[in-house]
Amino acid sequence: MMPPKFDFTGQAVLIVGGTSGIGKAAAARFAAAGASVVVAGPNQAEGDATAAELGAGVSFVRADAASARDMSALIATVVQRHGRIAVAINNAGIEGPFGPLQDMEEADFDRLLAVNLKGIWLGMKYQVTHMLAKGGGCIINTTSSAGVNAIPMVAAYSASKHGVVGLTRAAALELAASGIRVNAIAPGPVHTGLLERMVAGALPLSEIAAQVPMKRIASPDEIAEAMLWLASDASSFMTGHVMVLDGGMTVA
Image (cartoon, rainbow, N blue to C red; front, top):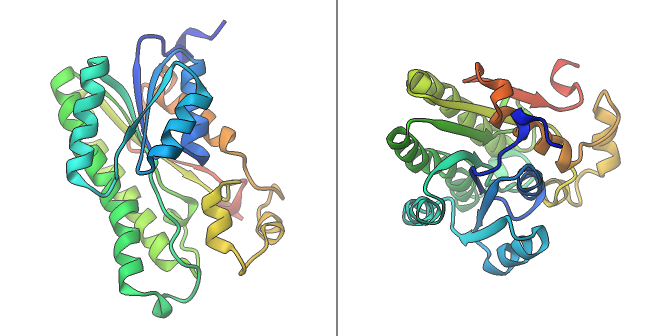
């Protein structure tokens, strides 16, 4: 039996960027804890496949995190289906090219910031409006260890993730007295498609693992477990916190 603090029965959980990697693992974990989970992403086929794989407790809504129209419509759809969003996780993100900052194209920079930073802001914009009207809620943003310590060769990615940290902390202070908690997860290297694409042809995963004090790369499930705790009553006095899960990299 699920411990009461980790029982989300009757609660709606929205995961923006929930069709793969960390978001998909979180969707599975929250569904197992009894939540009605809505995953959102830009790819209809991938989203439908995710919902079918994870079962009846998970549904999909197509939405581009960088589109204000899509994000506003997403919140309206979830509210229509479930009445209230108890937990919102803003996990959408893209990797951008690996290489020196001066070699990056403007279009790649703009797209990276549009998804990784503007997308988080748009999610929060409509989630906060809804939660204020409903008396509270919990928001979790996915940043990165690259948003805590700078990482070379992914300068724009690192900048976007530093921005998520700033948004999270400022929003937490704005909303602390309103019953809305805002925290962030900062994963180090995780076995996801994003990591593989980011370093493809430039850096083998074995070399990345060797740089981690724990000498391995995390699984998406390990990050999802932390999200479950942050969303639960077990962390009821925590807001504005950036939880780093990186095998010790940022303190090495």
